[in-house]
Length: 250
Ligand code: 6GU
Image (cartoon, rainbow, N blue to C red):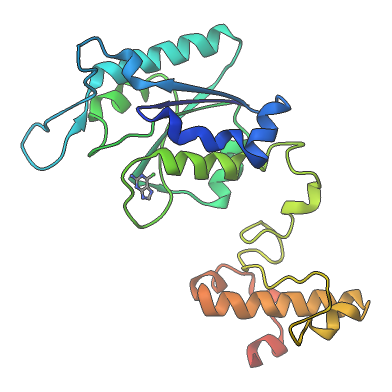
């Protein structure tokens, strides 16, 4: 997968060199290109923003730098053999980012991110590129950040770990919270490792029982308990057949 990111803070994206995403890049599974939006300004002050038409607070990012940057990114990518780009526009007014959207994006060959600062980008930029490529405006949650760079890190990590060969064990995302399947939409319960006793605290007996059926049932019960406590809204998305009498007594 190819990723292009256009930003006025290239250094904000340094974490893409670390850990899972960094390793995926080193292995050639992810081809990341970071571009400085200010390289596409031609005035002395490298201006990327201006006051909003119609008045109001804050500043709006200007059309010309974004247009020149995106034209260059698209031309470079196509020239290097990439195809079918999707433009991802991080914005608190976008479509909610979910595991389902992460899976969808992980199947695309080329993502271009346009993280903005200030009050966002002049609308005409996305109207223009929407005539050329698919555009997805995406929000990572119901809170306001100062810019789209942190959302790019979030979306990239969620997508990268789904790429073939990036996680060591293909089974590693089977039980993810929000993964599709029988446990659909249940949050994951607690996990334990050695030693079996720490500061007078024992791990749950069932985990040492060697009884796989009972362990699976216990994990499911814990997942259901946690989901009921933290995300009662998710219970409604579960298949009613996934619950039995014992669940309803919990
Ligand atoms: Cl994608 N951008 C900004 N600035 N704030 C957000 C967001 C995105 N998602 C949630 N809050």
